[in-house]
Image (cartoon, rainbow, N blue to C red; front, side, top):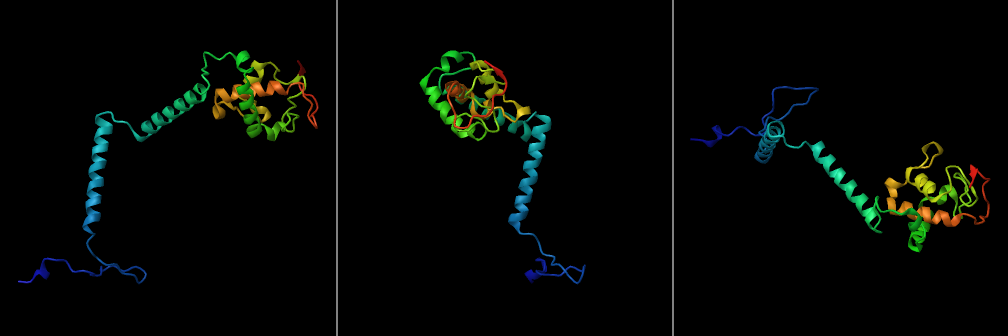
Length: 192
């Protein structure tokens, strides 16, 4: 009794030929077949859970995670200085020295390319004179920084920086009013 009769032949060529190439007709490795069956079982369980038990889809899971990250980043951005949407007193916040110092850092990193280091203006308007396109009050400046002016090329900074840094940038810009830059841009907007 020979055991060779029960085992399939190894490296047996298939009878088909394409462009002079033939393939072997070997069994798949057992580990690969096992992984295939496990994948099929997990897929069936996932489908039953999704369709019959109201399970979450991958898109639902992703959306929930994204909302969680967005809400936590907004909370972190506003809670760093104890600033919340309801409690912001802009008139008081722009007077704080720590906000002015942070505002200078924010300005140097984000605003210098368009407004120059001294606020004299290049692509963006001059921030040192008394002429303002959208108003020169603390509230107007805050609104422009937070919401941007897309038609003029200014992005909304609040989603990027958070409320604390927008308030800080507002505080710093108010200190630039009345200074004399090296090469000021011509006045734009209405006098304040």
